[in-house]
Length: 334
Image 1 (cartoon, rainbow, N blue to C red):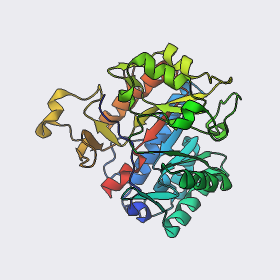
Image 2: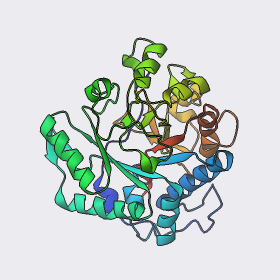
Image 3: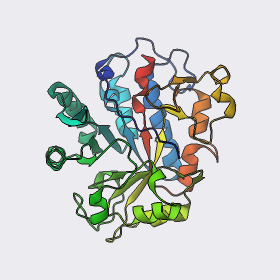
Image 4: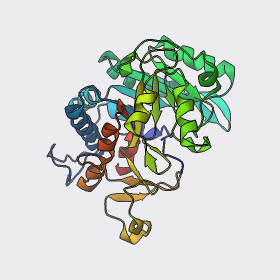
């Protein structure tokens, strides 16, 4: 299985202001003059409304949405509140620490202050705030979690950006906030594991049994193992914590990029001249990933609204929610 896209760059463009143009039509997916921030907000809100109309307890965590919480010329207060209402949790990578040539470096104080101010908005509204920093040394890992705990966040770490293995703590036990309670909301989860690349596991059964044995309150995984989606039985198995209690299982879903290893990708699209107009261009930092004009009706049909659409398959498999990645793709269209 090829590497999944999990957005790692916290760009300085977070501070940018929005476009002065407005689509003028909140319900039109094919905006003539799209306002990137508002279109991403609208997509998240539409996905949330659609899923919850079919499964009222279905939940969403958005990754890279910090910049969408800032009121600018392109993002109104109304749109910010719409986003806060649509998502049940907000995750930000590299929140407290940055990777400086393999060495952990504390986040720039001004950026940290900005991120904290943005996260205060969903936190005040009762939504979960998750952070994920890439650290492997014991001291910064402990500091990272202490910093998050002091702010009311759920802060977890991963040794590297590959997100392809279960941390030692998840195998041996002793993860932060480990418990046997039933976890039914993002807000009540005290820890989480994000594992998006199962290629290191010997088989599908090895993958599922290894995940099932971990004590985390929430798992964020891919809909697929290899070329086949997980079944409802697979997901139900993962929803039980080994120490007792139920947990949440969320499916990864990129909303800002398409990938050439996904089932919806057409062979003809490998020729750049034959790609549909809603594919904006390749992401040079991530082979196989392509930015999309996410307000396009064609992209939205891939994401939801039919039996073989991505979100509909996630719902059919019995996942508790979806993890919306690449929400900062709006910066591409500034």
